[in-house]
Structure formats: C-alpha cells, structure tokens
Image 1: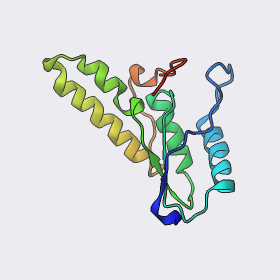
Image 2: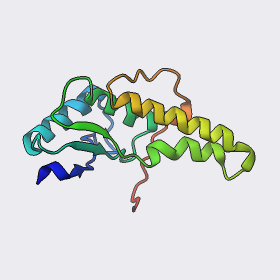
Image 3: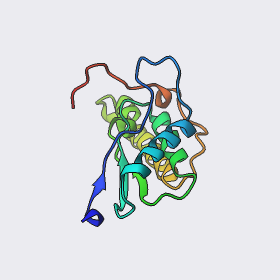
Image 4: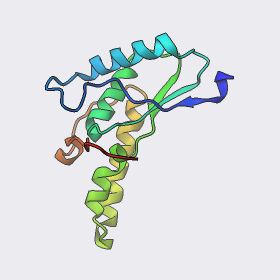
Length: 139
C-alpha cells in the first residue's frame, strides 16, 4: 500500500569533509536518479530532510529537484533549515518576536516556492547561507 506513505530521506550530497561542493543541479540529479531506481510512483510524496545543509542550500537543492516533473510530490520536512535564522533572530528576547516571525515567514515562503520549482535565492541573508552541519550531532 504505497499510496498511504510519505518518505522522509536525505538528499544525496557530498560528505561534510569533502572539499568539492555539489551544485544544486548535481544534488538533484543524483538524488532523483536514486529515487527513480528504488521508489515506485505510487508513493505520493518525498519530504526531504535538510541534513546539516544551510537554509539556502537546502532550499536551492529542493528547487532544483522540482525543475522538471517527478512521479511524486517532492517537498520538505526541514527543522533546522527552517528555524535556524528565526531562532537566532529571536534569541529568547520578547522584543525580537516580530523580527523572528518575519524571518520565519521568509524561510517558509522560500521553501514553498522551491517545492514548486520557482525559488530564485535572491535577497537571502548571510545567516541563512551558513552551513549547519554539526559533527556527531544526535537527533
């Protein structure tokens, strides 16, 4: 009963210590080729983890995967790549709540566009571009 499941995999990206970074198109190609070989079209959706990528990198990679039709709905199930800049902006201070909400809305809109293949990456903050890989991180 594949029609009743959603998958939540990681994207195929170079290892954290690899000096050569992959382009969003390379990540999309490797990830989608792997999924097409193993995941039947009856699965309705693939919801990707961000896996330590920066907010912008995860969004660009998702966008690249949605540049052409897929047999499944390809979207996101990010935690840190959705919340990181928001939480840093808030910093636990009540006076920063509005600014943090605005940053969260920017991230949500960016990923909404990416799951449609319409994200451009324009106007992103430097904070959103910072990688979030933590060696030995345990969920």
